[in-house]
Image (cartoon, rainbow, N blue to C red; front, side, top):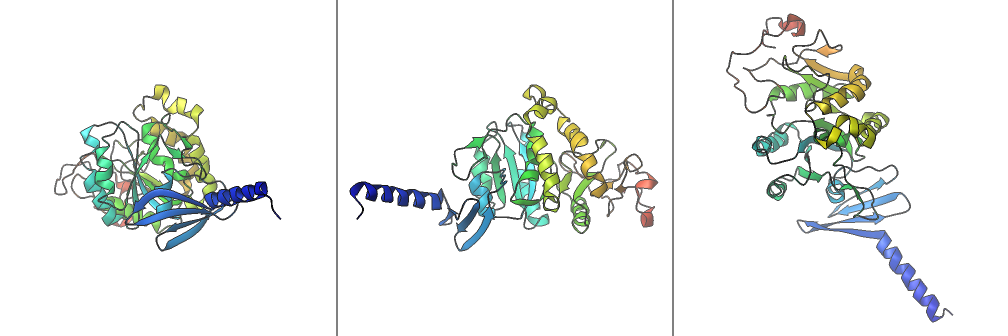
Length: 332
């Protein structure tokens, strides 16, 4: 028969097993509590209301907090943004942008990567009213499924590169990097749709004579599930502290340095397997194609603020950058 000491050890073992098997995230949404169950060494089960799914923790990388990541499950599609500071320029379009994402990017979530410098009142204001929005704190990148308090502070990364983080997220299959001060246009969606209908892994847009960078920080995307090795390689460069000293010197998030990173470490990896739409610099940049639909007014993808679809005041695009069957599109 087991003595008292043996029984205590057995009880402790049972208790430890129960704690290990069921880790409950202490957040509820519409009375549904999300539970994380450890099946064995690397395999987990998530229960969220009537929904459940399994995943492996081997080589797992999550770039938004655990609860927000797990509640959406695997194979996520993400439109990603960076937000920092309190400049009204980056706040006034958020509500409109969230509506446009809901309309034009069905089955996508809107991730807003931020630090502690933002106006925090908008977090609940937007998340509570929009089920597709997730605010992701870059100070708290999750590192462990066993200890939810174990996090990595990514504040050493250039702030405009936070929006690139989904590229290495195990739960994300498709991501688009965008700017919070730009309006989503039908022209953008037409370009995205051509890309999604292709076998190309990457997407690059340039739509203004001043769009000189090889990749603009808010005008590209990647089908990360098509090449996890490539996606993880880029992700590891993004979070590399030594590289951050080059692209974020002094932690000042200098203008255009995110695009220097993309030019040096992303463009040549994806250009020849990307859908590239370029309305002005197609002669200079290889593998470029005309945008699939004609420009309206003075609107262009990546424009800051609102545009005028009836304006006739815009640059004439080179004939080489016009569709072959639409050489009459002076504004292409």
